[in-house]
Figure 1 (cartoon, rainbow, N blue to C red):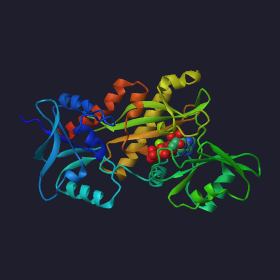
Figure 2: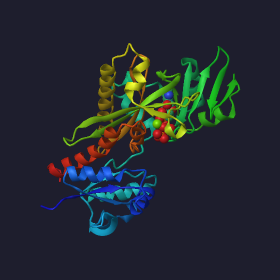
Figure 3: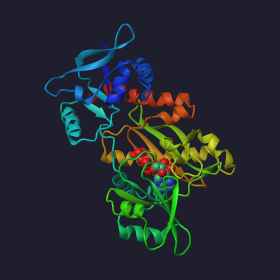
Length: 356
Ligand SMILES: Nc1ncnc2c1ncn2[C@@H]1O[C@H](COP(=O)(O)OP(=O)(O)OP(=O)(O)O)[C@@H](O)[C@H]1O
Ligand SMILES: [Mg+2]
């Protein structure tokens, strides 16, 4: 029997890395090992390599000498999307390819934070886990200032922690805005930075979750939630990101450091690890199941989840192209590897199920 080929759709940078054997954004050997385990053969290509006029594609496949070579092959029937596409024509191309019967999972991987919030809010069970969120506008900002001690204003589209501003109430008349490690206090006259963001419809205003802390810095969690070899959602791993001293964003791109949950909970002796883990798992599975109703090909997400000091999970955002690097940085080698193996096991499930 022939070994079926699974396609991994990647961006230009990763593609060049594979070609020159220097890919450090994706751990190619993990895809290879997972494919051996599940009886599949991986090939890598970019969206621009797909020509809809033909069912053939020029893809990178490992040759006899152990190096990746370009080969003309039939477009794989199952494709795991690891690219980020912003242009409308890319989305149309993917849709047209799907119309030919090809399954592309995680086809869309950018969803606005506002849209995701609206979907999750529809489910009553999830509501307690969602910080109050409003679209940016002057009126909403005034309302939120009155209701909450601390606010986060951030772009609805991704930012890797950039553009995220914190506003804090100081007393009945004064607030302070924090951004780029600077602080500025204000009363009725809003500083330019506030004005700019509050008047930008692509921003959201959110109640700041009182995040649990590790050695005096707030932390949140990256939770890898993926479809597995049974076609079911599972939590593949949980890792913590601790903000740099004095910062309120935990992003690694902003100096955050990665730690295991066990380490992060060591200061919270009253919290039971298993109970906290279970509630993170329960919430995460419920949240992605809900999102999956609206995004049918969703199969691999990295949720950002905050923990309160009581160990209660609070939703921050859903990343649909998790770089999985946080697990590596926390030295969670097995979990890091599993974040690559699980989507391949899901590809195997799709090959074996009646879908294809
Ligand atoms: N409501 C909130 N309460 C507390 N902290 C928050 C809140 N929103 C964001 N943060 C902090 O800011 C960080 C960045 O925000 P978020 O994850 O929403 O966007 P992002 O990582 O910049 O977006 P993307 O991953 O799409 O680039 C979070 O990891 C968290 O540490
Ligand atoms: Mg984030």
